[in-house]
Image 1 (cartoon, rainbow, N blue to C red):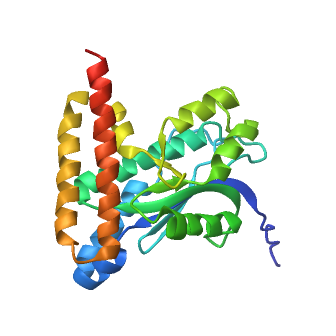
Image 2 (image 1 turned 90 degrees about the vertical axis):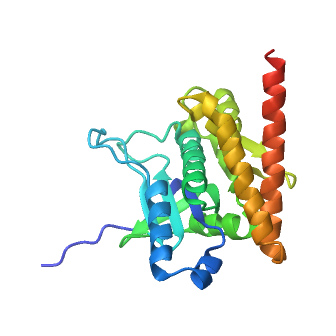
Length: 255
């Protein structure tokens, strides 16, 4: 008796594609044990939390990782399931925590992209146009230690009611508040600014800024002879300076 295979279909999805920045250097300079640990901590940080009490009608995110690559996929709307309302905001906020936890706790930088498009899941593998687009965002657009948001994500959020929590204007404004527009016009996850709002005790924020600054200075010293890596730390320095400047301006305006 043969069993009928379920048809493999594309599903419109939110897809996050991230990997470790500078992984090739890790391979050449670290032991296999060190690399294994780095991969493990990135996987554990990036994997969406699964809750035993979650409603079965709410589909959980698909998560896959290979070497230093992690992919998170959430179907936007599935038959007989709740739509993915709020998932764009949720996925970006998740990246805020992933980036900060890995940088401050492990000294690991990430690069990646978030997109929307067609994805299929078959035999445990995720594939499709959105995976290709995610790879392009990570490898060609991000370039620096940032997670960029494809313009198609904000367009989908504006036009697809399945993603709305309130209405398109409110949701788009709330989502853009998690982002910063860079010198090249690309939106990216503004982790260093947003993490202040996520702290239980905001008085800890200045110490985080100092730690971020010291991390950058060490990188600038360490890679001063490597133009390609140095450029990434210079970008990080400018991002840090801009964030601190705006934070100081906000604090002054309160007094």
